[in-house]
Amino acid sequence: MRLTVLGCAGSFPGPDSAASGYLVQADDADGRTWTVLLDLGNGALSALQRFGDPTRLDAIGLSHLHSDHMADLVVLNVLRRYHPEGPCEKVPVHGPTGTAERLAQMSGKDPATSTDGQFDVVEWQDGSPVTVGPLVLVPVAVEHPVPAFGIRVSGPSDTDPSRTVTLAYTGDTDACAGLDTLAAGVDLLLAEAAFLEGRDDAVRGVHLTGRRAGEAAARGEVGQLVLTHIPAWNDPGVSSAEAAAVYDGRIDLATPGAVHVL
Image (cartoon, rainbow, N blue to C red; front, side, top):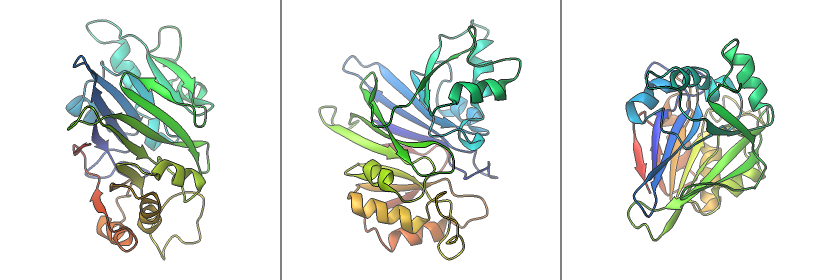
């Protein structure tokens, strides 16, 4: 299983990165590569064309419906619907309640979920697994101002296909029971860290700090922590140091184009 970072900027595209977007890929026993897209925020379609193939997606999972996590689905619909080789087959889009309405609202007169659109929307059910080839996705409800889910993804290891590995993507969340469920025992925790200790302490129920992400990683005994969703006005080194103060495992900062092999 491989995780490719398309975009990792927090809340808005930064000067060096699009907003949130991640590819998870795994090969089945016949050598077929299965591709799941987790979120596609502002600008992330550009990176998807560079590091993946927008016409060959097996499923899309949305953590929540803020534009920095799903706005580029509108233009992905255009790319897939009007492709010179003809429209692509519809791809399942798993998301919170209201996903179809949100896409229709953003798409205007070119709706993404109409009969000739590109997306077949399915609403997440908390804790109910979704199988995509050799990958199993489990949505976990987390704490954010709108309905939001983190996503655990399990699949065959790239280095030893007989072994199952698991990554967890927090989406946007504060510390909560769902975060601990996501992190428990995973090989890699892709955790947002949009807030800073001491600056954002009065705002709860929205985002993690590096420290709170590190605490979740420590409680879950995760193998590797990757910090993401850091806004352009934050120093990523500060977020990393916050996490390192409470978690003694490997810590990486998400960067566009980085590939994490599990």
